Image: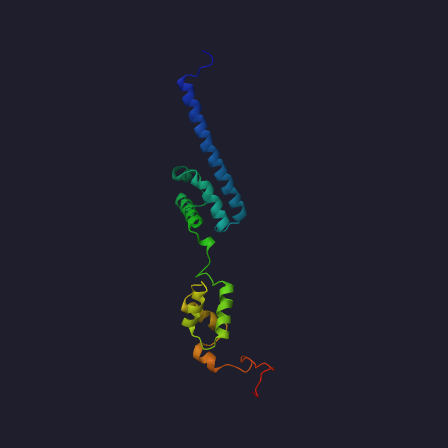
Length: 179
């Protein structure tokens, strides 16, 4: 039967294809390793940067520890696989999406806090907090204190005592004083 493969040929072709795939992975790894070596050589101890480690680790992962021990020449297979584990951990740790500390209060809220504090000089942090809560803004007393402190606005008792003439509302000219 000319169109039917016998089982031996089928197994031979399957094994050859698998070996070719592994050899291709080895070749890709060695090419990358050689590129890195050419960048680094000069008779000195190799100092790899993060990008070079990343490139080697990505290629090394596909080979596995046993094959790496046969072909890796700059660093040990354990080191390569450790670099890969760190890369994966960094990829999924979420630190790239968040900044340090707590998110800042929205500028509109800060402006509102300052406006309420300046218009009501005898109100303390809790009273300002209550007024903002009535407007639908839940904000902590300590956040109000921090906002006012950053802007150089004193706490309620000092704010009332330190009112300047500029801060006092001026009487209108059309008042009837004589009546």
